[in-house]
Length: 536
Image (cartoon, rainbow, N blue to C red; front, side):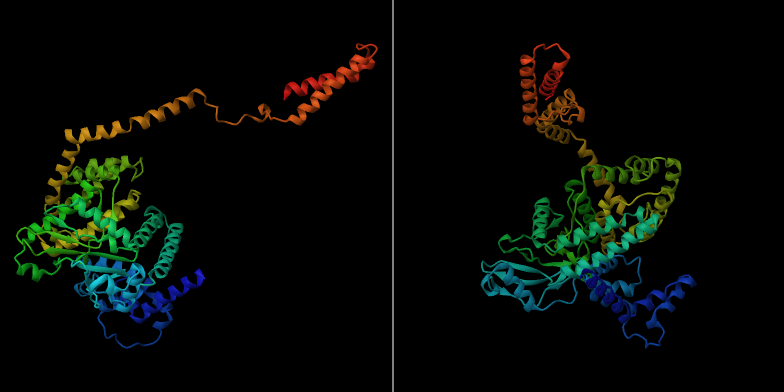
């Protein structure tokens, strides 16, 4: 049945490609003649076809919508990278952020009633059937609680899990095949990347997890001028239903509305960068789905703009080691200390230990030097990533799957920065915050906090030390004895030995001459009995 479902899903993908003529878009791109010749192997290209009525951007968007949430999310990521795509495609993909075709309101109400165990009219004083927004995994309806609070109700799309499972299965199959066939694919850890993505998207299907993430992010930015997170109403939250405070803000990409309220765009862009660094380094808890459909701007103080974040289904975190490594690398980049960057990569094991530091330093300098002292609008991070991958291939640098979400968030941040304030210097904005964070890590207050944390571990460390010393004093105590030293408690054999011993003693006592040769059976029985008893 799984094979049948997977084959059916692959056939569905092929039908969507044919329906929206995506192969025409592909073969219109520059490519080698031998690769273009593969189009002759596609049967549907053997016959003349009428010119498509839709633009190429619309065809790509509709195809992604038809293929489901994994493909929609890919389109959402691409929509933030207008520097990498023609404007007509970017404009169409932007519609995937919050304008995915909704499912029926009847299905939404039925799911809400199933999850909450009560009719919608009983739970809410008002429930709007028309959704406020619709995305790849869920859609949102406006409502009012019986206690008067204005809320939004988020509902998971029905029957998502089987489709996601089939797409993930195909991604795993492709990743495994690529790793078997290509050393480059093994270096990129494609299977691990797919596995991380699978966990991420399955976590998104659990709205209780999203509610918990939202509550944590709200605590992290309590009373902050940078970011506001809506309140979660836990009494009405279930795995497939989430109820939270309704917010009223301007979508971050609505430039006309932001200009009308005279928003300080420079400060808004700088605060976006500060939020990113705060989440990553101060909290190690960052919103990893920051496409424009999830970010709004408050209307209360346009001269002191504040972001509003929704949809915390995807959250990333870093270990203290990852934080330290990333901070030291960024500081070295900011200071253009490319030798230190190269040495950090070698010390961390990202590149082989035998890599020549001088060669790696020169390669990094060639890639990074052109990007400094330029405004964001003049920096193509897409081209930078391509060149970094070329360096990675040359020096066998491995992709770190645990940083994939962070890389995705960086792409989103850059896309937002381009929209809000193209003159923003990302490096000049981020460097002071990072330097301050590193100073705080070495401050007396933080050192005392670290010492206090270590003191709390002393009882545990003492127990571990005692157990270690006991094992060292008896290094073979837990090892089983060798076969020749193995002692078994065999009372049956002991009894036989005792009988032999007794019988031998009786024969020796009744013999006329115990020392005579004829008395040998008695002595054999005695010796055997003594041996068996003592051996056991």
